[in-house]
Length: 327
Image 1 (cartoon, rainbow, N blue to C red):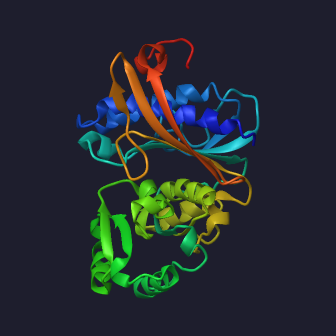
Image 2 (cartoon, one colour):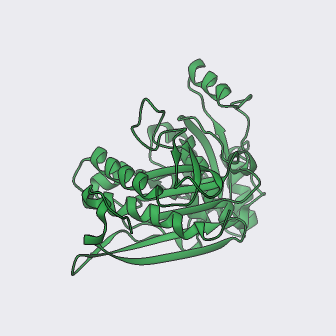
C-alpha cells in the first residue's frame, strides 16, 4: 500500500466525525450513526483504492451502505480489505459522553479477519507487555505477570473494561486482587487501544466486546507495537456455524494478531467525535469553522501521526446531502 493512502483514509474518518458531531447529546443514536455512515460512504468514492468491506455496518440485507462485501473506493489503486466503524460509540454521542470515534482500518486484500458480529473475549496490552501475557490465564495470573513485567505494585495497575452485567464476576475478581479499575460505558475500540498510550495511565484491557471492534483495535495495536489476543464467544449453534462459514474452522481457538490483521501492512485512522483518552472531539469555532483531531498510523513504519485540521463548513457538501465535489 502506498503511504499517501494514510492521509486519504483520514479524510474519510474526518467526514464521518463532522457529520455525526451535530447529534451529540441529542438522544438519537440512529440519526448520528446514519449521518456518519452516509458521509463516510460518500468520501470513500474519492479514495484511490479497490476496497471490499470485510467489517462494516452489517450484512447487505441489514445495512443500506458500508455493508459486508460492498465495494468502496474510486475503482483504481490497490485491492484492499476495509474495516469500518463510522461511529464507534453511538450511545456515547447520543448522551454527549466521551470517547466516540470514527474508525477505519485498511490492509492488503485477504489480510483482515472477517469477524462475525458476536462477542469476543479480549486481552489487550501496550508494547511493554507484548508477548508476556496469555488470555488463557486466570485474571489472578495475568495481573501478577503484568505487575512483575511493569515493575509495579498490583495496586498501581489500572485495568479498563466495559461496564456490563456480563463482567460482574470479572470486576469482583479484579477488585479482590486489588487493581485499579476503569469502567467504560461504551467504546470498545478505545478501551483496547488505550494501554498503548502511556498518557492514559491504563495498563491492560480485559473482558469481552464486539468481535468486529476487536479486529479494528488489533489493526491499531499492530501499528503501535501493542498486542490483542481474542477468543470468539458463539452463543449458540447458529453463531458457531456462522463462524465456520466465515472460514474459522475452530471458532473457539485463541486468535492472535496475525489471525486478525495478517502479516502484511495495515493502516489505521480514527477521528475523535467527542473528547476522549487520546483524541479531542469535534470543536466548533467562529466563522463556520470546525476543528478535528485525528490519528493515522501505519504498521510497516510504525509512524503515528496526529492530524489537527480546521474545516470550513460551507465547503463540506456531504454535510448537507448535496451533490458536488467533496473536499
